[in-house]
Length: 157
Image (cartoon, rainbow, N blue to C red; front, top):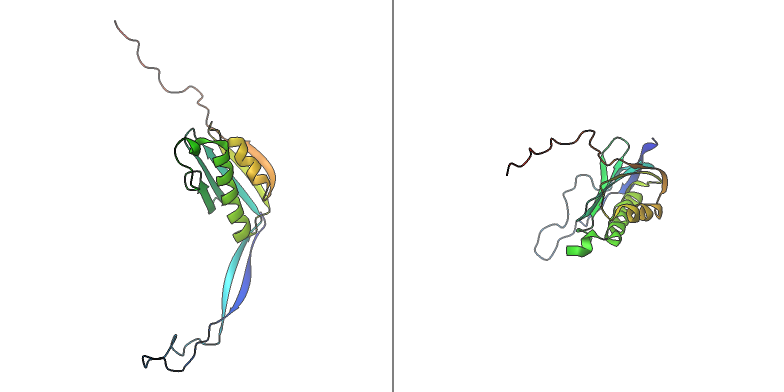
């Protein structure tokens, strides 16, 4: 659980105080010119990659260890439509997009993968995660009913 915050200092944008062609002043008012703005950047080294693989689509959600969503992607959102959306390659592209965004924006290094569902994008999405971060654990959290739903009553003919 290595999560910390870095403070990044950025220079404020100073604008010209000269006049423009329309006769007004360009830019902001005189307040805050030349000051430094402090922008905090969240650094999350440990992430959890949730893979929901259905028969029609693959959804990838990247969260921190507390469960806050960092990034997400779907096979449909990556441009796959129809029957191509339910392929392993579509799941691979979606996982790569979501994990790459989390890696670039938050500096993610280690991932725990949780797979849910019976779809074809299960294994391919795990392989795509491996390209960007180190995988520490893989869990299959597909729900299995203990007793299931009540069976329908017998047909009377």
